Length: 98
Length: 372
Image 1 (spheres, chains in turn orange, blue):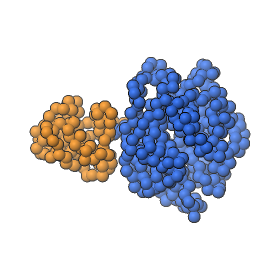
Image 2: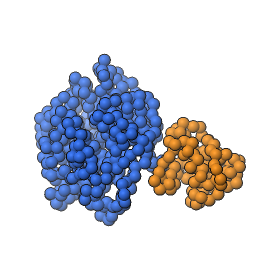
Image 3: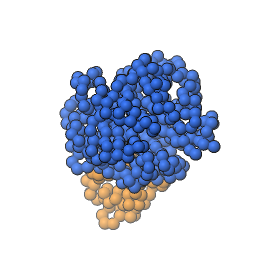
Image 4: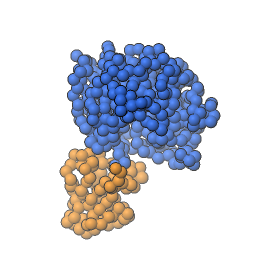
């Protein structure tokens, strides 16, 4: 069970609270976690990753364990603390604009 | 008693304003989708409680929302807008080739006959259609592929397809407008297209007076009873076509400035046209700080200022291209929204105005539904 913290706009869109939990089959990675998130909450498709290229949107960041994982490979294993559920995986709307 | 529902898209959410036929007291619902840019909302003419809405922002991209209960509740539908085939390039601001990239949906135009069919005008300019209530979208690729697409350039607001005019008499006829490429017309339901800009002059930006494309058309309007007559607010110039966009003549006449964005036609008088003159393309606000709608009752050239109830000092808002609409009650209502967050309404064809709301986020679009 992976804990995922969503930014406010996506919480509103999915009609969920700050944190949701998703089941990931196999090694948890950015890709598999977002795949599982989109499967549970289809309205989030295209909001975190471009719906066509599947690349992370420019102003979306991924944090975990006080590290910015945004530039890691989407297929890199997530930190053990995220895998065990001790720490959440954060989807963050980057600070941009005015 | 008949009523009206005003659908307002703003920089930070959508609002639904409702009133009975008197249009004196208004209920304000919203913000829906708080914090998101709502470029456009529009209801199906055949099933008014079916409303489509374009929701986007720079962080999380594009969503399409649909309501089946008049805007009380919403559900996200499809948001995949994939250009047909290899997207190719258009011209960038500096004239270099630039790949076609989807940015957002500017305008949604529901079918005149089928509530599940809706058209989407997008940036970078292309026309999409859904026939399943917004769940899936398919490009009408003949528009970009007709031959001139590689020469199109964006206007200051991006290269957007912002206007879609359907023809109540001929379901095959679609007229669209793109900034800054111009008007294009299809006579076969969107399969094939050709430029429809004859008579437009854009000497400040295009040296060739007879250029087929490249004109910065801001908006089009038509009256349902005379779909062959089209009115246009161009970057500069107010134009008119009497032959379904085959050719255009200027009808700016005695307007104090013919720059502007919004234009619309009275619901019952096909020759009565409304514009909101804006000072210039470098000063996007009304002349002399006076917010004035201009009305022509003779199809253009002769214009009268409408000022009663509108601020006549220190007003420096803009009225954007999709932010004016009319209702079809017996005494035609006219509505427009401003970048200062006001939505003004007139229940007497523009003779007098009053704000429905004063302090919304910047208004991007206004559409009106007349309800039985």
